[in-house]
Amino acid sequence: MSKWLFFTTDEIKPLGWLRRQLEIQAEGLSGNLDKMWRDVRDSAWIGGDAEGWERVPYWLDGFIPLAYLLENEDMINRAKKYIYDIISFQKADGWICPCTDEERKEYDTWAVLLISKVLTVYYECSKDEKIPPVIHSMLKNYYDLLSSGEIKLFNWGEYRWFEGFIAINFLWKRQPESWLRELAEILKNQGADYEKAAHLWERPLNRWRFDTHIVNLGMMLKSEAVSYSLLNEEYTDKAERLHALLEKYNSTPVGLFTGDECLSGLSPIQGTELCAVVEQMYSYEILFAETGDKKWAERLEKLAFNALPATISDDMWTHQYVQMSNQIACQKFPGKSLFRTNGPEAHLFGLEPNFGCCTANFNQGWPKFALSAFMYNENTVINTVPVPCELNADGKKIRLETEYPFRNTFRYFIEADEDFIFVIRIPSFAKDIKVNGENVSTDGLSFEIAKGEKREISVSFETEIRFEKRPYGLNFVSKGSLVFSVPVKHEKIMHEYVKDNVERRFPYCDYELVPVSDWNYAYVNSQPEAIEREADRIPFSSENPPVVIKAEVRKIDWGFEDGYDTVCAKLPLSTEAISEKEEILLYPYGCAKLRMTELPIVE
Image 1 (cartoon, rainbow, N blue to C red):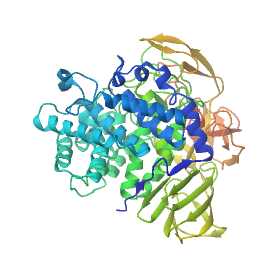
Image 2: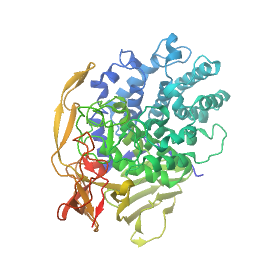
Image 3: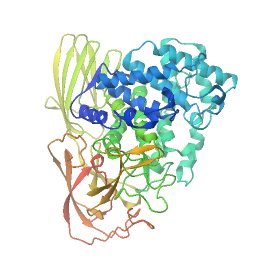
Image 4: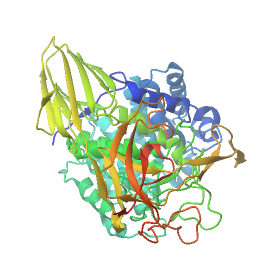
């Protein structure tokens, strides 16, 4: 296997639309949770009386790299204050989580695994040498408690045991000590074996379980990649085997698996939790780095360009708990929830619809994606995902100017203070690939860059508009990594209120989206046409997408799901056309907050 290493926030800087996306994030919830959300502002992690488990670590996991990527001094100082407040409460024996000594046995140590990862993220961004001893002391204490039997893994810790390997591997690379390997073995032995539960993924269960929980599964995909080396095991590509099962029985057009909150089958009207989007992305980033297999990078960009922006408002002040492939309204269900184990508000856009984990956790999505743009192995640099950014590391300077995925042209400006090899990953769907105007036939490009050289490389390729098949005779439209949907125009109903001492007020109040345009369409079997438009200040704008597709459709009698008047039926009542052909513009899935994505095709 070809392993790749990540560059750090002082080596990669976002440009173009990617920087703007991060700026919007910093101006929205991500950059302000510590000012207005009690679970972060008053957390027990920093001496307050609010939640003292996963929410502050979740938030910091994204807030820290966001601050450093944007070189925002105010945010950097706020991140440092949180980290320093957290470590100031570390006990003499190394324990760091906010609970009493007597409560340790009942405290789910998923929080230990999570804060250990966050501290490594902070160190990699800040290079603060106070941090490694804190991680060492914390994990050594964790090892002592687990090995003595004083505590053990249960619940979330049991099903997320592999998350601790981020920090364990960090320490092992700095100073390998035998207890680190023993800790790794304890975690795996006490942790859940997902392969034993894989038979449960074949059909949805209206029952909450850890081993069908969609966020656990998104995290789980990287479990072998992060652990096999330290455990002296052979790598078997377990992730691909389990991914294939999940995809077969629970897939969506945008590369997600349905889970609202547990696996939900192949229906286009079941949801997927936002936490699962960013955790699946992180797993793919790790999997590509560990294996060099380009399938993980291609799957990563599909999630980033579709699923992530679709479930967060344009201004990034609100988000959904679950998104749906065919989502004609986001209105609270007055009776029984449509979702298998989520409540009736889970698809609303708001501060913390259904549950607040995603409020804190979605923050890692874009920053970690940006840090995956370039990776390296010795003297080789690879452009993993071709998004606009600049690399400046160890005498290698590469600036990439592009509007990908909305355009398929790329200009690389390279300066070298030493010899190195530069690799550009070309996606499998690319057609008519050109380098500096010349046709090439390859699925990967490699260039030898000489010391002292300045070089410009221009790359372009074409992507076809395709109808791709979905279960139940439905289809979706794709072009490269972008999935397209019929957008449903809507009005917003704003709700400002206080619940459980948490205030919702503009701009972080709740919104219901009420449809005001038709949605009961089928595609006509004709060739759609892509139309490029001037970019908006909001990269994935729901008002003015940078690319749309003109497609022919006809109305059909689709109908509503039994018992609901704000949810389209899982399948149309009839595929008989009830209107003449008309042309409509399809929007990128990530731009269409209300949408119909999976449709039948009629003649």
